[in-house]
Length: 317
Length: 317
Image (cartoon, rainbow over all chains, first blue to last red; front, side, top):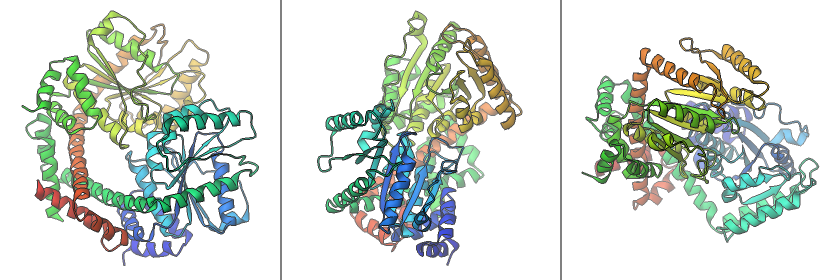
């Protein structure tokens, strides 16, 4: 048994230290990490993957903590991944001193981790896919992917989720801006947090108006819920909405299609590895400079060179 | 001659309409666009590619306009690409009503375009690479890539530039934050714009302090320049710094290495196309569901399936 295979077994037993170790492999995009995802993937597919996004200051973290608490009371195990694509160089900071909630119930079945990658742009969504697969195979019932804002990377990461929740707060001028920027198209549940503040109903109406305008999903009407996460109000409604959305996905057959999509994604990642492996091997080869010069001068075309490089790689192995 | 080849000839003659059309092909990541980049690449490599980044509100656009004006006075042709990775769904808005400068000198040798892609996360840096290649081959002397902020996508896009300029303004609280987030590591020229405002010297000192701490580039000391772009002050110094940096790259042999890096990047793109082409062909094949089910159940591993898919693609062509 290889090292990743044996780690996979410990992870599937739900042991926290192997989980942390596996996530580090995945974050580094190492070959061990890839083998690990491979080994775990067939055992994943049971968890409810929930994406939560919203601008800084809307109280996202407090809401996630409250949700985790409620899930724990229902005896569900919760994995939380905090993803921050906006800080490629400050990896790991997001959860630094975040969890101030000291409920003992949180200790047991909750696993938290921040994800960041220094490398390639696609690296973060790759790492998130791997981390979700790992936590899923480790037996977590709910996996929360938390991101800040609505950039292109966040949208791609949110596509890994079954249910995507958009959190807003009244009085933040850029709320509606954020909706305009594309969040609307990916949100299946909307939460107006800090709903005890002035303007909460206005924010709800603004979201509703925009949803009515942009509606393309007639089989699921996104609910708009009000919460005060700080005080715990409205959390049960959010949990109920998540369950309802999960049921909706199941009944419409979409949950199965999502799992098929994940499988296709795994194959795609393997193809990308094959391509980057071929390129790296070519860069090590004696005639790399000649190949480069051929393309640079226009004597050879890059497509033909790419094929040759791939052909070498396939016969070499 | 294929359609892309004939368009490539018109582009190399510097005609504006073919340029606009080619950029649209590239933005859509179409096969025509790929063939076009291929055809243009050997004729690119002469332009000075300048990356300009900074938070919203620092006066980046005004500065770019001023720079363009000065370049034009020196009879240089300027291409400007405004890239906005934060708004995947609002493509094309950034330049909407931006250019208010009506100098006649701007009409002739300046080409402006905003870039946005709806698709894959890597799509934007791909499109930017293609757009830079196109403008370069079209004979523009200076190509400015303008991005907002310092997200992971911006950092990747900035790697396409020869010289990267970071623009800040005094009194914006998040300046130093932005520097911390990684901008420091990519900036070769720092500009404190709106330098007539209070706190400009403080901002200069803060940048200098951080540069001293993080210095890893002993062969190039990034200058920190003050400008008031609105009034045109300090622009010549920025132009001079850009020229100096370009000379530095040339003399150190780095300009050649960058061109080699671009060639390798072109081959990498061709390899990625090969991989995605293989996946798409597999998805169309009769046994796709069987392949998926094999990976999903853990009966086959994704790597082996990826190889099989690639092998089919290579023999099929």
